[in-house]
Image 1 (cartoon, rainbow, N blue to C red):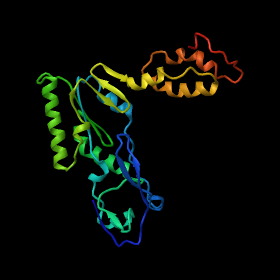
Image 2: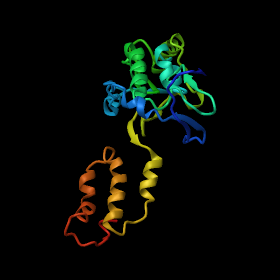
Image 3: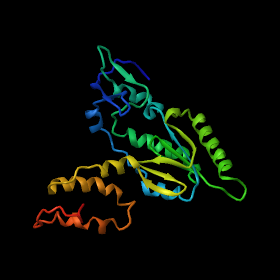
Length: 249
C-alpha cells in the first residue's frame, strides 16, 4: 500500500475514529487538493436508485472493504501523496483518504464496472445493491442467484473485495442509504423514527426549529405531512405567540 519515499513533497497525517470504534488514517492534502482539477462525475440520486429497484422481491447489499485502497495510483502521482506519520516519508501506491477527487474517482470506477448490469444492480460509492424479481422462466430466488453470480464474478475479475460482515444476501428487505427498501416498498429507518418520537417537547421557537429539521426526514414517508405540521409551522411565524397546545403536541 505504501513504500518509502524521497519525494520533496509531504503532508501531515492523522487518524479519526470510525463509527465502529476503529481508526481511519487521513491526510491533510490541502495544497494538493487546491491544485487539483475537480472531477465532474455526478453523484447517483437516491430517488433514481429507489425507482430502479421498485417491484423487486429479493435483495442483497454488498459493502466494499476499504474502497479507496482497492485503486492503484498512477506511478507518476505516487510522489505527490507522501505522508509523514513518523520520522520517515511514505508515498501511497493506492488511493488514500483525503484526496478531493477520491470519492468521484471511486464512484466512477464502480459505476462503469457494473453499468452492463444496471437492470439488477445499483451502486452508490462503496455500496452495491442487487435486486431481483420472478420472471416467466425463473423464480425470484433463481434470478437473484444468477445476478449475484454475475456481480461476484465481476468483482473477482477486477480484484474488488467486499466486507463479508457488512453484506446481506437474499433478504426481503435491506438497509438502503438511510432507509429500508424491500418487497413492500420503502420505509423509514425505525431508529431514526424512534429518535424523533423521543425528542423532548420544544419550549421555544429555537427548539421547535431543531425538531422540525429532524422530523423533515419523514416527510417522504408520511401522507399529508405539510398539513399535519401546520400547527407547528404556524408557531414559527414572526408575530406568533408561543403557546404549546394539544394540537401542536
